Length: 346
Image 1 (cartoon, rainbow, N blue to C red):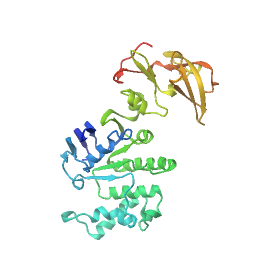
Image 2: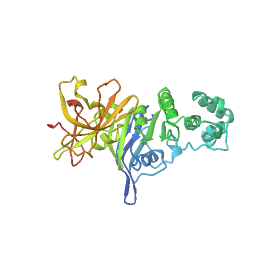
Image 3: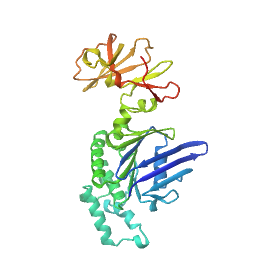
């Protein structure tokens, strides 16, 4: 079973609490994404699951077995690194075969078993034609497949991926995401994917764990995280552009730029109207991005609207308009803690 359980996991480096009390359960066959900015503790958490770091506190179970103090080779996991970490002097075949040849004792495989496992795994990832090549003769996407094949050839319970797409260009990243998700679904392998890229997180994850300052801020499906952020950190971190947060003394409230539209295009009767002073309009092909500020607020506190091309209302800079937001799309937050609170009167 590829169930991963973390109970009270912490990692301290002196006074620095890199990971500070994580409780989390990853179900068998789940694709879980750990998302957060640089320095939030996501890679440290991944390394503890892999056995590359020993927790200061807490317990790790994989497949119902406690592995907190086990070395990586005894955990039933495989890991793909950001750099792929392929051996440049070895062929693709030898790179994939390396973990099999490293086995000792009763787990040692003979030559024919290694050949069968390598060719079978390579064919699944459609790199069987590249087995004689060196890594330098491959594209970025092909190298990624080799790294995944090397991880998968040992048939691990859990696959750990540490920002494996970050070295690819934007176009290749999109196709690599699709291939990776298809591969994971086909083999139903428990996968933990670390990234700082929200597009990767939203596109790949069955669930997303949002981290900040060593702590979990929210766990949920991509739509839950996006539509119902638990605090202002999640609200601001997810979305491009991020959620507009309007500050008041007694509470803060927020809404997504795509929910902020000219009044004449909204049919919903349960709406809130705002006098909106437009400063600048950006044309982005499929969308228009409107920069402005709400009446009664400082000009430097920008509120953004994102208008798709099918919203054909003419918007000019340095003009005032009535924009509106459906009442259900407005979220309310405690100004002191940033946590979600119940609805207030605007």
